[in-house]
Figure 1 (cartoon, rainbow, N blue to C red):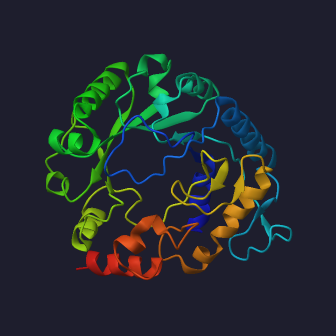
Figure 2: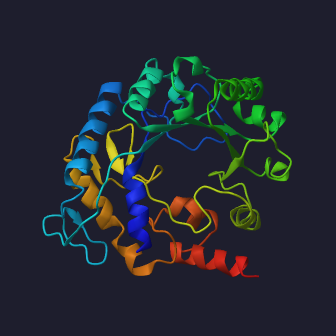
Length: 312
């Protein structure tokens, strides 16, 4: 089953948001700037407990089956073998404002984990990270200099460009996250940053037309993927665990036994296991915001609209 393959990836490659605070005040930002911050120790304790649970139980029948999942206390169980945590994606806010963030990354890389960091690229602490090849950087840009600085503040394009150049010289894997707005849309093909690959994201201020949104989704490398649907075990700065980096639907908390939020995670995918029109989603009402952005009543309508356009 496709969902089980995706589930393995979602449990072995997790997302952590240590904070929502940022050093910038971007006009197009859609995150809530709460003051919650996870400490390095909280993150390390969570990771240790989580990964030990995966390793100790991956050969046992503890995971509830997607086909006929029931209440957590009455699970129909299935085996998901040889599980272990492989990578962590960090995002904020801006993670590099945390004083001890590079030391956290160094600690995790030493545990044989691959790290990915989403950053605005305006705080250069790259030389504090000891193993660049195992730390990927996703640096966000809003378009060419005039558009980028209009959103993020004067001088920030040059800072981020310098950051990318420095990262490449140190051996970091780097990709560009290109935010598509009504202003940057005309530059979607011409924007270039050291010939690096780009991942396109549509802005959450709904400034794009339906036609533009579908164009980006159909013709460009986007996040989430073209098949729609996206789920990943995600630890938020509040200590709440969700099944999506943007979802507010709780599956458990940082202090819970891993079995609780893992089985709640699997339970949340049960409706998708019966539909399978996309890759699955733990929060179909939100569905990465596409229901609202494309003015559709449900996730099924979004997928149907997309497929009707791509088939033409």
